[in-house]
Length: 597
Image (cartoon, rainbow, N blue to C red; front, side, top):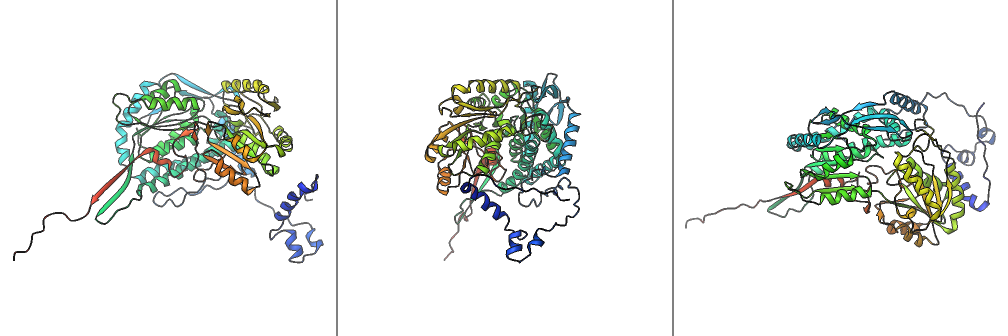
């Protein structure tokens, strides 16, 4: 009465040997038949006898960890992702999604000085998989609300600046716990407002929790001061003070994690924050403001100012009292912000610090000896996860000629297996793109693709309702074409060929961006060449180019991918502080009279 799966490898012997060796290694644990037969001497009859199967309890959602104690936070630990193999976890998420569906259409106010503000005009966020459904109607702010928020920040800023770092970190730790308690609820909201499949939505919430936990600890470390030399007779102290009011302009693709990272970094270092969320996903960002205020953040220290980029965003960037601007988004907007922030305006007493992350045209190299069992899933996740709407997504695949044909056959087959649909269904791998403009832009690029390469796959079996774009693979792409040089931010993969690994690295570096890059190889020499030669802020070896973890893979690039320290790393908080050195001469000074003789 036991269900078994019997399989045998089929294919060529030599390529199959690696597979057979892996299976053998997997069966060399202490519980395997190899040990029991050849070490313990068990009989074949015993080994093939029916095992006894104990009744297992129904798996439940994982138990939440204890809240962080600010007085003794302990080491940072990454928030574990949901284990979707557990029926209890899947059931909890399904219930949260259905509950979220019943709350759609709510009105979300702005928050100024700790109080809700509703100026009248509204921004409607819609379900990108079902655009006729309004997820939230969110207050649209302008200069009047901005002035009120700025005045509140000026009033509340000095007190927050004087608040001990341990108390500021405690707010972040409590916000992390607030999010843990509502983890499924927050992820379910992202399913509808951002079009995220379950795993992507859960990952975004986990990353937001990680930012709170990590930056809280980093602030405590920073408060200990920097290390400087103090010679005899002199004491030197290196410390850090807040820069001033920070403007945070957040994206839609990680609607909780990225605004959480930028906002908490500014807050925990003592700066008031004016947060403008993305117009496409403001309701998710509103949950961040709610979490922080519920965790003890004083009124006036954080304003939630939804609005358009042209009005609210521009107002924040140009205001002379803003000392720090943290932005994640497109290259065009990021460069415009950088240029505007460089203008000195009347009443401005500082040079604005700008931290911008602007995306990439990220390459993934497949070496001639790559393990295709590993490579194909890594490519699919990198290129088509969240419909390619990650700044770290691989949009260029650089393939060695020797493995090209076999790889492409398997890659097309794997991409055909992706389930596309409304992400409220837990079985969906890929949902919609975020809005109509994105769908139309991507459709134009796909229609133009035959001019620049050979379209080997463009799936049209997508829902008619919603902003869906089928995953598309274009082979033999001209490296100079827009398909290979411009960020499309969608499920379109350009495949380029290279005769040698050195040529592949050169081809991968042929871009103005420098955010992420990857290599799939079994050659130690080629891995070393890629690790040292690929021009990118994050280089990944034998894994997808997406999924950076706070504290493990600090994230950020250079070139036209951005300016500033890596998010989720030990240098990021330095962007929000001014370093100060105090030097004290400790030698005794004064007049020492001679004895009268």
